[in-house]
Image (cartoon, rainbow, N blue to C red; front, side, top):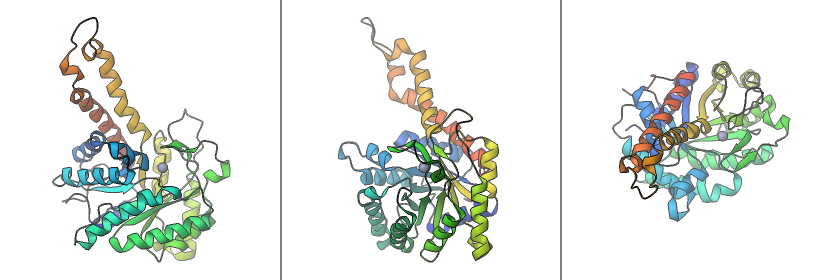
Length: 340
Ligand SMILES: [Zn+2]
């Protein structure tokens, strides 16, 4: 059962934390992007995470236009397709802001509860609540309530404090105030104190990271923010309190900075933008090289072999797969699957 059960998922994250590596978490929007991520994990014997955003869920739901339904359908797809693969692939969801909780997180949690009540494992291993636009107190109030409903089902909650800059999936923080891009040590202690007694959680603390990809020099990462925040938490609560941190906006980050964050407790890094680019890049290449085949020009009939979507989707999957392998390599999780 390669979607890990709650205990196995905890072990995957704990092993990453103890050995200074991180799990690549890949955003998906359809079966092609799911298969690209799975192919990368299988080919390299690497455990990974597949995640669905609210926009990705809605996209996948087609005419139903139901973000939760689309996320459920993709998660079911992963459970079925990955069932006999020789790696673990966990399932989570990405940024859900406050006004989408009722449309997205609650129906997803309810779906996992139905399964657990029937004696099965939860559909997802965890969910993210993004309350970063709220005052931290309110953010943690909602986070506590969500985690309290998830923890008994074996799911963990990813929270965010501070703001990830840039734009992704309709959340535009391009003009966020500079100081909001950096989580303070006090905030990190507060998040730990708010959630520690309720259930397992991961924390997207921000250290200048942005969604999207920017030309070199435009992003000022401060990984030492994470080091200082961890130090504050550990000073007060001991080494066992070290936080499991999540790196958002992983696309386009220099490798030295990724490696530095691994020492400070990053155990999951989200990669979306670069995977989108690699997927599309291969399709563009196919279309340009096969211009006369994919189009019916001047009374010609084109070439079915080149406009069959399988022909270019296969290339798109292979191209995205290579970017996922690059992410796992940079995160030092390549080949470290705990599946045996
Ligand atoms: Zn993010």
